[in-house]
Length: 102
Figure 1 (cartoon, rainbow, N blue to C red):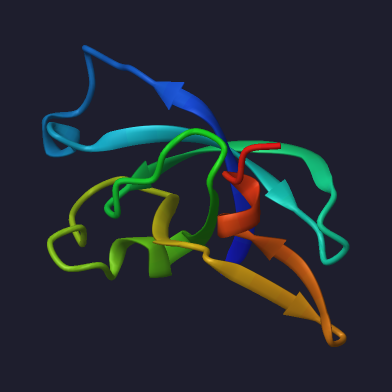
Figure 2 (cartoon, one colour):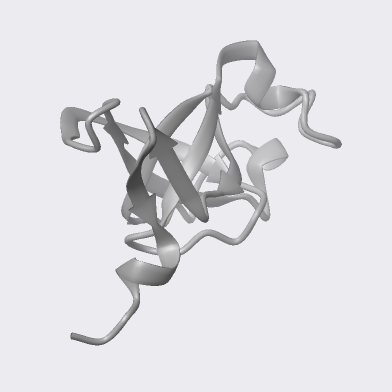
């Protein structure tokens, strides 16, 4: 799995029949220092993630293991919304802090 930030949504009215009902998100990957990497990817979403949330992305064959996704042509799937990340005893990310008014 990889950590990513949801940067936007992708709408496709014409797509494979097996993808009907799948929500697509544009995600940007994040490194261990919490910095955005230049790589973007379109991922299916099964958890209802929103723009600017940090998420867990499963890629490759593992992306299709999610119940009911086995026959869908998906290379990446958002499988979790991140609440907190701690690295080397320091808080790297907190969803609670992200949405706290200044």
